[in-house]
Length: 143
Image (cartoon, helix red, strand yellow):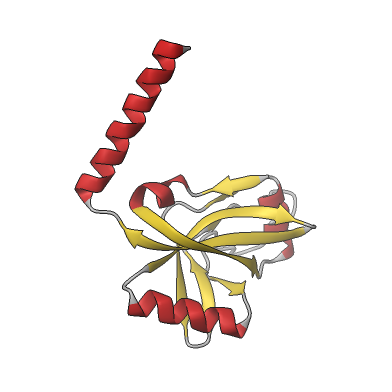
């Protein structure tokens, strides 16, 4: 089970990645294990001395429904204080963004891979699409 934010690689040039734990409810853990989560449109923000995953969608686990459940609630990420301070200083100093790249299961725990990324310009995105198309055409001709 690995949930990938494909838009992160299209929108940003990822320079560095970090692995973080995530604080979830029991029903949310079951949903993520079933692959019922989406990271598209979500972002990571440092507020004070804590780091949060904002706007990530985790669908409600059907057998155990919670009244008034919010799929896009803000969830706390679990990192060491030194890592949070380093992320905060790198993001602010170099004008970089914190982007969730993927969510996966590791040793029974759900982890979120957070990337430190620089936003791509429109022309850079077009060049990446052209390269991808050329590579696909080459593979068709050879294979």
